[in-house]
Amino acid sequence: MAKNPDPTLPLTNLAGTTRTLDDWTTMFHLVLVVLPDRPEGAQFVPIAERIFATFGDSDAKVAFCVPGPPAMAHRLLEGARRTYSVFCDADRELIAGLGLERLPALVHLRQDTSLANVAEGWDPKEWQRVAQAIGKAMAWTHPEVARPGDPAPTPGWPALV
Image (cartoon, rainbow, N blue to C red; front, side, top):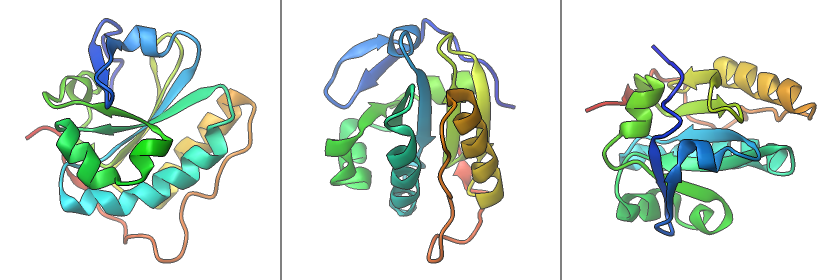
């Protein structure tokens, strides 16, 4: 079950910079799309980019989280890794700390690192609900998450293997 993560949890970005989760959220809320570490994870990148295009100018930091080493992030994200922040969670500490059970996941963390909202697996209605809640929290608009051609709804893959 999703829960508040430990704010002192170390989190490393793709550039190799490690800070605590609290440090990454000091100024902004954090909107994460946590991808499954399998080739199918790449199909959720365009959905995340739609969400990030809307919230990127809000008071939220948008980022991908890949449960694997940098090489996995490079394979899954291709060009998106140059546009958006990317965190690598090779030991799945963040995923476990959030209590995630299924990936992909859309996660909204407040500035104090408390969990505001989460959608696990690919359920377009749940992701839309979370996107609307983020928009409301940020006093911002929200994206239409799902589009024709998106993957079919799926419970996703186990977050902790």
